[in-house]
Image (cartoon, rainbow, N blue to C red; front, top):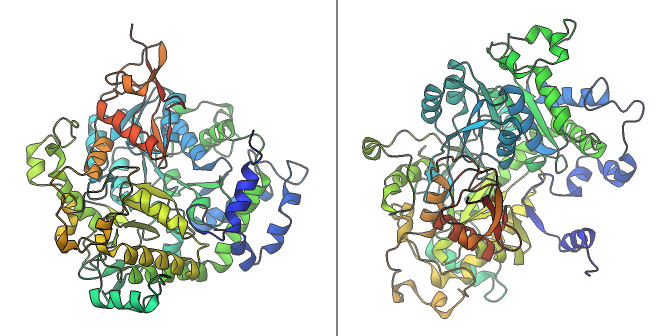
Length: 635
């Protein structure tokens, strides 16, 4: 039996003075101490109570909890805010069950969080999938287009609501304003999972969305390689000039608008991810417009006594607004814990007070630090960073435009949503914008894939949030300091310098052509070879091949028809599941998005991908320790 546990691990990790570019957003005790809440941290165990007299009740707020919720309503400028102590997941589930009748239809992005799929099961709801654009350059999901939503609403007039994540895990935002106009034109409810964008409102509120253009340029190299010395490393960067990573015309800071300002009805924010509350805390916002406009099916969703009671403060809303607050509150009390943590609620209160009192300064510093990092990143040759370029052309949109033409070139991989040949010749408008606080980096030009880069950063005390293919996503937060960004830059510059022999120089126009990049070796192989240290001119280019990222993205965009689930189920080894109907959800975590959903057929390509993820140590929910998954039993 092991003699260590969670506590020992946490103390050991903290002792290494790590730099956190993962959730939570506060990044540690120093954030609270710096902002006047050292006493809160010092006495935290003494603040862990239950519903004693005067402590209010989360499910019937009339006192201190209501006051904290009102702080968020004021901060987000919405009609009503609810504190969540079981994360955004509960807010999403409650919102769906309160707006979609049992057995009804929900139009949902296929890249929704797994909690949305759980809501389907709880409400016996039929999903109508909206497929996001696929960014094959990076092997990730992009934005969901208004055109996609409108087509689905037109085809499914009986759908009750629409839900999508924006930003997604990588910071790509959909055009919520345009989508809201479409959804409301059809008289439906729009729910936005803004778990990764709780901060967007405050960049807007404090006037920090104004574009800042950074032109390519040098700068003093801050990194130090202990083997070669700072002088030699700086000389290398001076000789090679700036990289192409931020575009030929530079980079532009421009933050997307929050969903609360774009017409969404319900917006759920994970304040713990990027702001200053504790992990598992969140806030659900109901916007003012949601209670001003009518929708027809509310009585079918909820016929509880609160609405039936003519004295209820919500009685006037029945049949007159898109959101029934009584139905929403009933679902929240049904799903959230009956023992709500006062520590989580206290952290939400502290977070609200800090943003109210010091928000403009903190968010301005956050913006300045990110701009500093992107400018410094431009000095590292061929370090690719997902950005919006100064010429107003989004790399996300540019890559998606080119990706459309690759969809049918992967023989036997999948049935594409782009079946219309006219669409292939004239790709529709791309709508993705980017949240600059998510730093997505790619060092595949150095022969370093995402998993290896993450390990190298960990060795240097920097801990990212997510790895997907060649991308490492670093989640910045309100608690990150300039010192954190300097350590990140130092680590990346050192990695680039020590692997400079493997660098494959690409022109600006070529860098979007993924198959022209260095072909990476398979997982588990040692890539730090003598070839890494040879000059690029002395090495042969990798043979043309479909890239791993291209195939990965194809799997995530694959349209799988829904089959009726057999009543009998069985656990079957993964290798024997090709052609079987999945009876559970197969969810790589992170990002927590189902690759295969219940009722979908499992293909050989999916099995190969799942085995790869498990081989490199990624968690895949739905696969047992013995490598089995639950499928419908063949009769």
